[in-house]
Length: 260
Image 1 (cartoon, rainbow, N blue to C red):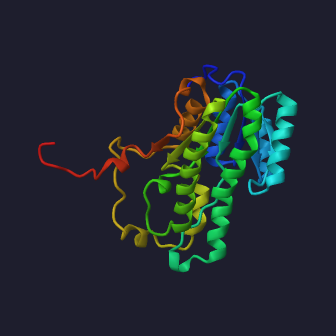
Image 2: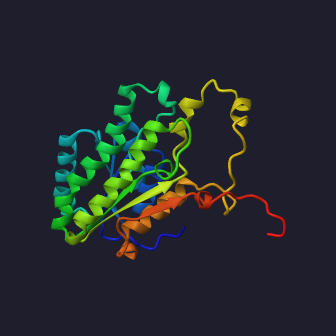
Image 3: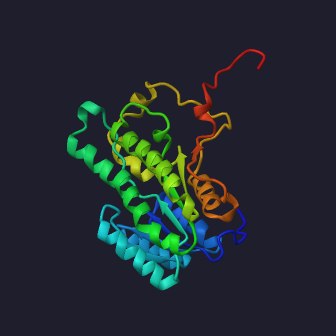
């Protein structure tokens, strides 16, 4: 997609931006004219990407309340404002409920849900001072409908949608918009560890994956494009909304009907 300066003058923090969807989003933001802070715990990858695209890297553990306060303070000190937060960082767990420990469940909720909560709270004052802003929380298709083995992850991503709607109600009077992106696409590196040692034939026994009405799966680029839209002034009247990126899979069963 050709850059058109849709984010000129905006300052953005993107969490989990060292790789995957966050990295794709950071690239698009820089291309569209934003000053970008890549926030991640993956220091080497984050610094390399920041140097490549002309962004700033900051180490951030999104479960660290003090770390959030420091990041926002440094960002505002350097760029004089903060306009956009993309709460993208997350961890994945694929396990049945019976095989999920309380510690594992709490870990997923702490990172995915509490991390998002801390981000929203940390940037609110800076955005109020800037006269408004846009917070984009990356939920998941697993925060819209679920599949077996996603109990902890789905619970965290449903929580992200709830936080999004509450924050939209509370922050709207300050000109701060809060929306959720619910993509089917994600970073394949998050899934790969859970597939090690699994026979592809066993996966096939679960049945065919439903074909989206649009005929393809979304890409990380599709997700980044949606986030750019929500960060831009083009989405000035959108808040509290869920943007489901699944090619229409959640609309219903795409089955063959004679004559249709």
